[in-house]
Image (cartoon, rainbow, N blue to C red; front, side, top):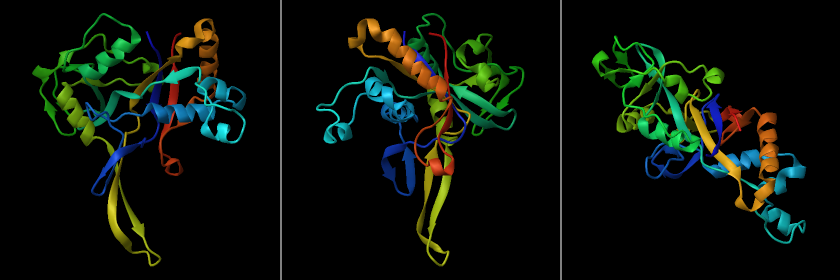
Length: 265
């Protein structure tokens, strides 16, 4: 069973992608699903910067600058690790319900494996909504005979009280991917010259929308043996002291602010 920390996005979050197509500045995506994610290096860098200086190198390892400056002779490994940030629930606009949070069996069962919950499956079109009425999403209409009542939906929203996510719908994997893609935050940017006229072309910048629920796994390295619990406690202190983090780029534009929540052990 992994330790999980949850990120509830308070503003759009942009993490740079590996490619730029045309005038679109994309975001980081999983290679096998093409769904947005937060690289573990981005999360690690922010947490390392938020760690008190006296514990920074012990928890996260030293840097090349430390070695070049003579503080250390070699690079050392830290005592903790963090994984990539994955999507769990994504808000999409709905003409019939305002905002609905969507997910899919693949994303939910990925989270389920990491939590250690071995029982329970989720079928496509399961929902907490009234199944006697159709659902109008941004680019789709679901008839009432497609919807399935979902009594256990609250068990699949680990920080429901902190986020107030109520209206949820599970879509088939492919349909969910398409709807997430069309619901990404996109902003048009232009560059003005000294005469306040557009210089060159324009570009679109993508971001994961606010109110998205994500999570990332974390733990301690194997070499710690008996010291693991102390290190976990130290990292939880870092989490608790920084309930709001800024992750990714464009901080000056208010991007990337997230609520950090940890649960249980």
